[in-house]
Amino acid sequence: MRAIRAIAVNTFREAIRDRILYLFIGFAIVMVISTKLFGMLTVGDEAKIVKDIGLAAMQFFSMLIAVMMSMLLISREVDNRTVFNILSKPVRRWQFIVGNYVGLVAIVAANLLLITVVLVVMVLIYTGQFDPMLIFAAAMTMLEMLVLAAFATLFAVLTRPILGSLMTLAMFVVGHTSADLWMLTRQLPSAFTRAMITTVYYLVPNLDRFNFQTEVVHDLSIQPAAVGWAVVYAAAFVGVLLFLAALRFQTKDLK
Amino acid sequence: MADVKLSVQDLRKTFHPGLFEKPIEVLKGLSFDVRRGEIFGFLGPNGAGKTTTIKAITELIFPDSGTISVCGFPQTSLEAKRRIGFMTESPYVYRHLTGREFLRFCAELLGVERSEQEDRISHILDDVGMKGSGDRKMGTYSKGMLQRVALGQALLGDPELLILDEPMSGLDPIGRRDVRDIILRQAAAGVTIFFSSHIIPDVETLCDRVAIVVDGRVRAIGTVGDLVSREADRYEVTFAGAMPEDLSTRLLAHHVGSGEAWVRVSAGDREALMGELADRGARIVSMNPVRATLEDVLMTHGEGADQ
Image (tube, rainbow over all chains, first blue to last red; front, side):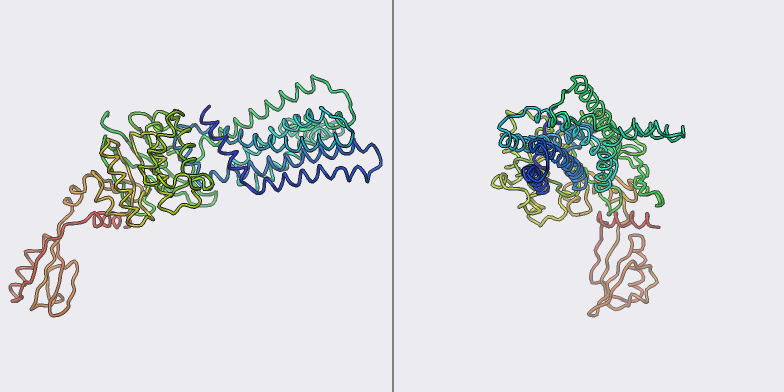
């Protein structure tokens, strides 16, 4: 545990000195603050529009940070060969993967916390009310980011940073459309195509499981079972993805 | 086996750079043992397989076949890694950390008790001559300072076996002397030292035993004295009154200048040369035996591998 903690802390420190992180955070905060402008320009409940766009911005920028930072951090350790210092010590390779992942998750969580605070304050100014459901929505976004960061970690081990980033971005897009794919299978006459799409559906995560934005924005009821399943679903994906990343990294020659 | 700190047997490794590229066989059945308390030099030209061997020992790469044991443990075990202090060929460090922070990170990885860490790190910084610079960011360090900190992290866990990959390359003479002194101090403290180099004077000065590795195999192994005396001696003779081109004795090298000629012959040809010079009435100015240097041994084996 000490090794994982040390690697996570080091990863976190490495990340917070990266300017690209502050660029993303800056954009995210500007986006959340500018939701007031969107509220003024749009017909409808302004508070709901602020929440809707604010939550979407939170999700999008958290995704960008998770994808970019995980790629940068792991590939930088390997390319700069600082990983030699770590792995020549009594540290298992899976501990390096998990430590890096935990450090990355800490970065994403810190960023998400910051954006959430800004959004909560914005809504408080707008409506005069504290909306705790925004914190719930942020927590569910964090679950989604845990899955995406695990994908990014796996791709960082498997391939080069740019390709890995693109693959993770693709996973984000497909993950948010996989439910539609599932619906599509019912319309298809070909059994082969149906089987193919069903396979894809089960291989990629259904990231909409973590999306409770509609419920939060429109004050709809949320099923505790849906939240529970989302937690189990995220844990299962993270477990499997990190296992695969560790498995690949376990036999990787570091030249 | 108890007296062997590092054993490498029949190590083989082939890299596969790409689908359409030819595999590169780097290690071709490399074997050697390093005994307790000795300074063992791993000498070879660039591309001989030195760094690949070290990476296999430190589990950074995985050999295709062969066995490695460190202090009696397989190199893949944590027990082996706890006993190794490793310094890479170039100092790969986090430039945004201070030297002290970097060593603290390494101490955590090594499992050094937190209560002991600060004392230990201060001691190490002092040992590697970085006492006054430990709190500066490593991005501001010179190459020599980075090398010292990298050496410091290798010493941090009180290793039984210190593995140093080209520890003195790129250092100025003062830096090299300092690193050499640190190595000698560690050896005096009973640490077994395995270091690779292509800088022959460093190896000759420091090592109890040397392995010469060329083209993925150990070509010769022994003390510097063993390796050198095993090679045929040569003689350098300076004379006047005859031209080297006219001699029938086989000459290894020759040169003519300012009325005197200089030739180098193998020990076996020395008598023939002396006889021929006497027959021709030449005057012998000097005759010096030349012992083969480690460089000669390395060159001989290197040329052998090329052919």
